[in-house]
Length: 105
Image (cartoon, rainbow, N blue to C red; front, side):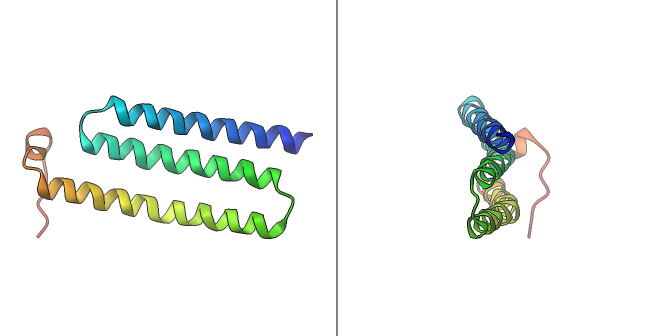
C-alpha cells in the first residue's frame, strides 16, 4: 500500500510539473526563456514519472530500463538545450538587444 501511494505521488507530481512546463512554453515569448522552462521542467517531470513507474513495477528488468531512461534524460537534455540556445544566439540578431552575448568563434 505504501509503495502504491508513493508511486501515485511521484506520477502526479511529475504530471503536474510537465503541465507547468507546458504552460510556461506558451506563457513566455522569448525563445531562450522557453528553452529554460523546457529543459528544467521536462527533465524533472519525466524523471518523477519514471520513478513512479519504477515503484509500480515489480520486475527488475523494467526498473533497470527505467533507470537507463532517467540516465539518458539527465545527461542529454542539458546538452540538447544548450545546443538549441547556441543556435538561437548565433542566428538571431535580436538576442544582443535582450542580453549581453559572448560570440563563439
